[in-house]
Amino acid sequence: MEAQVTEAKPRSRAATRQRLLEAARGLFAEHGYEQVTVRMIAAAAEANIALVGRYFGSKAGLFSEVLAGEPTVAGVLEGEPEGLARRLAEFAVARMHSEPESPILRSLERSAGDPEIRELVRDRLRNAIISPMAANLTGDDALSRARLATAVFLGIGTMRRLLGPEPPSPDDVDRLTAVFEACFRP
Image 1 (cartoon, rainbow, N blue to C red):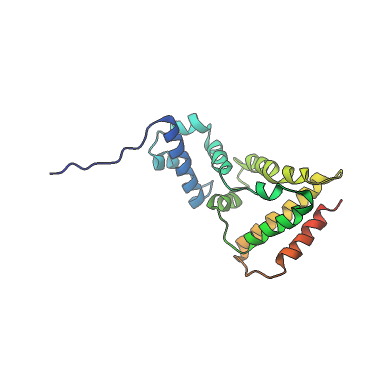
Image 2 (tube, rainbow, N blue to C red):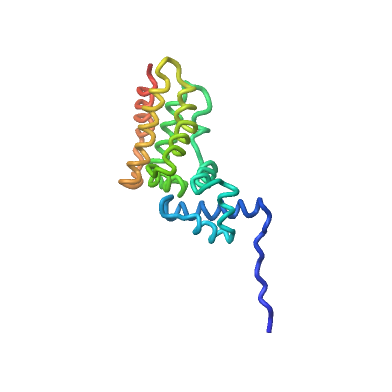
C-alpha cells in the first residue's frame, strides 16, 4: 500500500497572510462582502480564524487589503492635465464595452452600501479617484468638478452592470471626452 503524499501548505506568517488574502479575494468576488464570513475565509485558507483578526483587524480590514490590490484609474489620472478628459473617456469607453476586469470591483459595486465597509468605500473613492482628479484641475471648485466627473465615470459601470456591455460606437470617445471637458470646465 502506497502512502499518499499531500502537499503541505506553507505555514510562515507571510504565507498564511497571503492565503487569507487569496481566499478572501475569491470568496468576496463570488459571494459579495455581506455573504462572506470570517469563518468561510479561514476555512478556505486552511488557517485559524483568529489569524484574520491578527493580520487584518477585521473582515472589513481584510476587504480593504483585497481592494488595495485591485486595479485603479491611477494611470489614467497621471499625465498632462489638458489630456485628462480624453484619457478618462478612453478608459471609460473601454470599460463600457467589456465586462469588469475585476470580480472584486463587481463585488464592491454590490456591497458599497454595507454599513461595515461604507466608510472604507468612501475613503477609497476619495483617495483613488476624486482627490487625484481634483489635483489635475484648477480653480476654486476643482473638488466639485472632480466629483461630477466621477459620478459620470461611475455611472458607466452602473449602466454596464444593468444593460451589459454595449457594442462600441466610433464616436463614443469623442462624445465622452466632451462630457468630461464640460465637467472639468471652471
